[in-house]
Amino acid sequence: MQKRLFSIPALLLTAVLVVGCNTSDKTEDSDAQKKEPANTTTEQQQPSSEDTAVDEPQETPTSNETNKDNTDTSAKPEQEVNYVQKGEDKTGKATESKSAEQGYKMQQLPGFTLTQEEPGKDMLVSNENSEVFMRIETIDASQSSYDDTKTSMQDYMNAVGETVALTSEELAAFKDVKNIEGYVVNFDTEKEKVIGIVFEKDGLISKLIIHDNDELDLTDAMLKMAATISKK
Image (cartoon, rainbow, N blue to C red; front, side, top):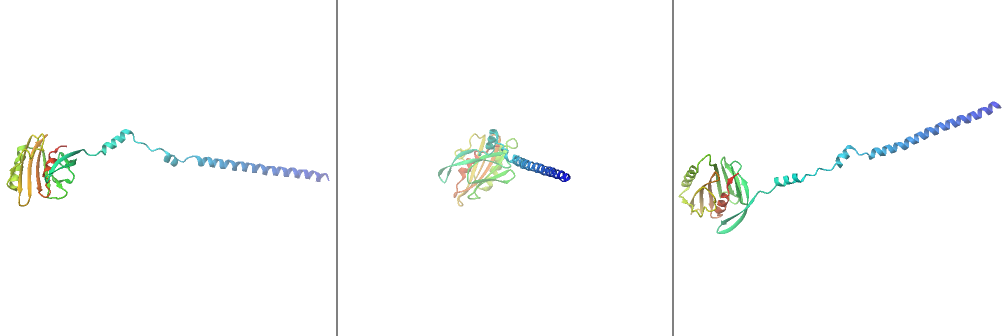
């Protein structure tokens, strides 16, 4: 009987210990589960390196950089050019053009295209009629003489037809030139004309040959553009 009484408390004690161990294990597991979500939340809140890179502010150009861009993309210099076409006074806004191969620049009116004809010679051609154009040839005064260039121009004009010298009024557009001379050959039956001019200015000798007709009558416009030829 005493052995039975002794065994019952022993069993109860054993049961208590087992329950306590299970409770302790569950408590630790519960604590671990509680801590785990907290750690996960912390990891999710930490920004990744990619997010950090995206959120970095973009660099804003300084005022100097902005000014530099504006300068690089600024419009070419413009100049008003007055000319006469078919007896009417006209005004056009010319923009600066530079020869691709030769050492000159000039003010070019709208309605014309400047292209290279061959080495040392350019063509300023009317967009409306390609038979109306001005051939431009420039030479540094240190490499040739005005007289030699004038002789070359005279020979060409004499081969074209009977020449007539241009008056000082017809050449009035050319300012501050050191030397200048020009001739015209008129083809009355064909209503066409050829003009040859050579002038020296600022150490540059320019030789011009103009082909024009009565239909467009762009001689004065081409002369006004030619008068703006100068060294680059």
